[in-house]
Length: 250
Length: 250
DNA sequence: CGGGAAGTTGAAGAGCGTCAAAAGTAGTGG
DNA sequence: CCACTACTTTTGACGCTCTTCAACTTCCCG
Figure 1: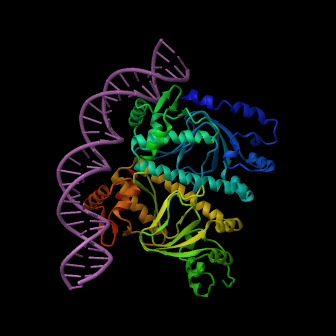
Figure 2 (figure 1 turned 120 degrees about the vertical axis):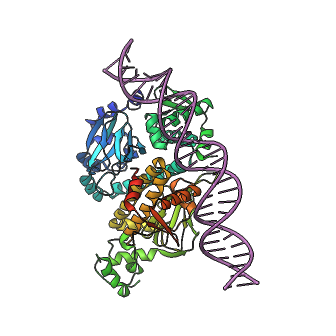
Figure 3 (figure 1 turned 30 degrees about the vertical axis):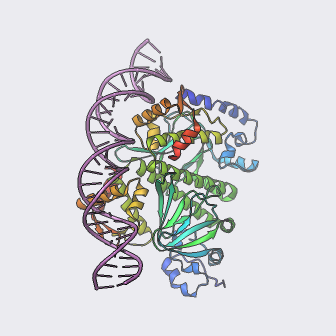
């Protein structure tokens, strides 16, 4: 699994190497157009840059835990992050997987509503909450962009509720693979094969299934010729239209 | 609308006492403090008032359907609304129940991501999307308030994912009743008994269960003395702490 | 290589869904 | 005011999907 992300993140060193020559490291940011920093001027970027810290996380490193005071907001620039909530007895629900360009840490009250952990080697920009809020007041464009992203998250969450509440295991897995593929495209990557950097247990906790059911369902889709399981945690979609039908329940 | 210049009213009773003398119907709005119109000046309220239509809906009346061009945003002022998504074969997932003070119609692309229907006799304020957006640009306080509400929705959605993906039928029903109770309190109503204006089928589609399972689970909770089913769609919570434990899976 | 985590597969069982029917409730009109 | 209808809710019997528990295999990373 880990080897797979090394591949996807191969362009990071290049980006870093360019940092020194630019006025703001953000100018070289490969995910800028995807996130809150889109459409900002160079001068504004340097102000953003001044308040953030860049962190490098190893697989399994936590960003924060549910219930903690929400002191920071984060922006994923490379790698993958999982966010989840727990029940008292340890049952876990992933509420999202985050990839480059995704934003996390919005807190309604003063504490995080979920925990966040790096899945692979991951780079994030970390913003102190108060400082970012001050900046947002001065850059309405950025605030509106953040609102739009939250609004998008809301639509994604509703789609996920439909999946969790009403789809079968096969439909869930099909939807999941298509979602990963679609998001890869939006980040400018190949749509197929799709990189699946998380474990079966993580996928299960995302889809409301057990690891065993996830594994069995992958096998089932493989045997019916709809997908191929490639080494390095990659999955090739062999019949996208049938997967799409399956995902919609037809 | 003629203008009567008043200072911002901070306390609700104070505001209500002034209703008769005020120009904008929004001044008398009982849910103002709960929604996007909180903390606006009288002059701003009258501008809001100028762009909205007030609609009265009968049970079953649609507000809009998934996929339709998102021309309006809505604010519930009285009654109850259900929002839901459908699969091709008719399977349905409620993504929320909305009560006075709640906001709906945010659309990421140009179309609604879900359908919305009145459950009971309902009053809403309807805002043309473009006009409201213009107003938001001029009233950053309101835009920030809307953002905060969307952010809250996001946290609620994540809680619902935890419920849908990982809770048992009993835990789901317990969580549901406690949620209704908590929201009633936030609207200034009694926390117990809780009013349950939606059908068993609607509840099932909200919790990822069938009507039969919802009904059986209600019966089970009633027989174990945790709730009482009252006429008129009311439920009395007989043992809140046990319900809370159950909702959290302990 | 070797050890531990992750993934796969099997068998058995539980929880919830499905199908069916009865009982309760609300609205309508004679 | 009651009968009629249609819908909602409840209850029962049965079945299926997914979970649980367990063993085995594969894949990494040191």
